Image (cartoon, rainbow, N blue to C red; front, side, top):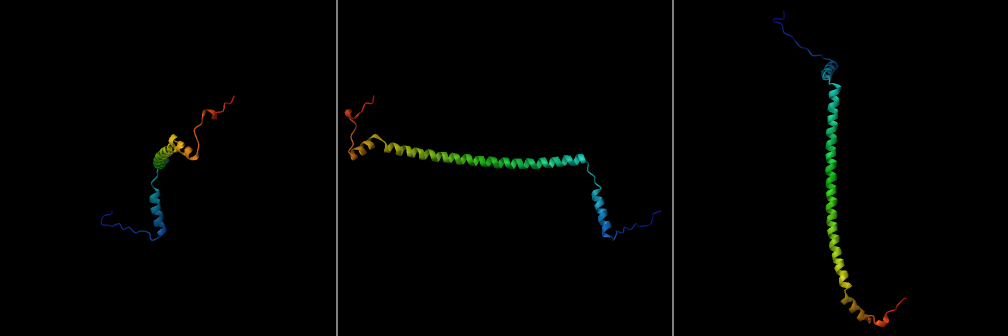
Length: 118
């Protein structure tokens, strides 16, 4: 019976009715709660994994920085210690001490200079 007849589509002029129909079309897709929970858990675990990897990489970089800084400081302190030891040995060597003692008029202790405490 529809032969030679055309079907004309006339949209509603009321914007509310158009809006509700599109909202209804969007809401018609229903998602199972189980699937929604699975997707949510997956997304949360993915975010936590990314955050954990970021924190671990920052912590590793900081520990490496501290390790290198300590190694450099150790090297500097060892070289300073070596320099100070050589300076100490040069100032306290027997020749230097005897020379300073002669300038002050001191002499090495003699046999009579020792006191025996009993």
